[in-house]
Figure (tube, rainbow, N blue to C red):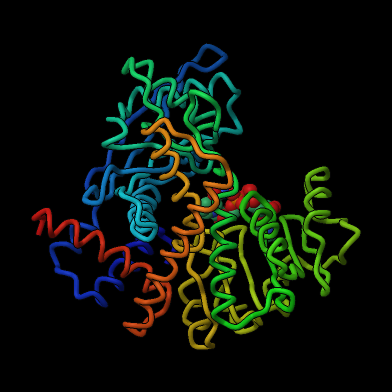
Length: 413
Ligand code: NAD
């Protein structure tokens, strides 16, 4: 299944079968409630004008205002944006976040634009989208947009409306007047680590005897490694795009973070030996955390994976074929939509803080995040046990049950 929209609908269909979802509701959830395609004219620095295509998909709003990211990528497709908006509905359901699913995007390559062109593109996105505010549709960041882009989006929105409203845009810088939340950078890694600790306890793993292998040492992988290291786990191998390093007695993650922070890679770190980056997934360990790119655990390598627990920090790291193999081998998989939901949960905290004007310190954000992640994990586990299904199916069923309940009680079916 190469088309991400087809894959999203496949997961929806499978969960709907388990739930016995009414046909009209399944049909409704299989099509975004609203999908907008529009153009953004941008004046380039050489004096020419370029037209960029943009999208915004609002999957459903029975559970609250549609919310989330804006992806800027040269090969972006409308199907990708539709699929991501459905995933956001699911993630919000999992995290008990009162929001529907939203996703936007611009077909452009930021690396080929200078700063002024990129700023005009981002501001143009808001001018042409005309987002309807904090209680209707809230854009956030994704690949190709970061804190600076979201600050421009908020500024543009506030210039248009003449009203300060930090909750109208997500993922903003955590500085006075911009309304961002502390802990936004760490959120996803903290959430992945929280799920890992919880699942390890259930499997009877003792942290100081538990070997963890992490593919990818960027924002998510490095925070996950640091948090698990602080919990006493043995992080025995990590990799990045350049290759992998290992130490069977455990890598010193504090020293590695300092090293990779200055060199830009984990390779060459003195506290470990090098190994083939491709092979890291098959290395002897208790827990494997793919935190890099999609489709790395495949039908080909799944039979050789040694881990007893896989926590999907990356989006879609496991192909459907591999998923079946892992399930048959009795390997526990915490699926991406649950494991990496920490970022969405802190986005919700950002909204709550923006609406109330009461901003929390990092400790408070981390404490509340852990509580929400544990609730989401335990809810999914109960559904899994009650229905005798995999965790992946259980998180979809659990989230969809909440969405369907909201639709039915509103009288939409
Ligand atoms: P990042 O760019 O900060 O880090 C990615 C890491 O993966 C880097 O260390 C990079 O060198 C490494 N990498 C890239 N290709 C690789 C390969 N083929 N083999 C091994 N390592 C490779 O990205 P991130 O923000 O840490 O995101 C990682 C994953 O988590 C992505 O799948 C992303 O979609 C997902 N995710 C991220 C967030 C978030 O809040 N950042 C939220 C949800 C999901």
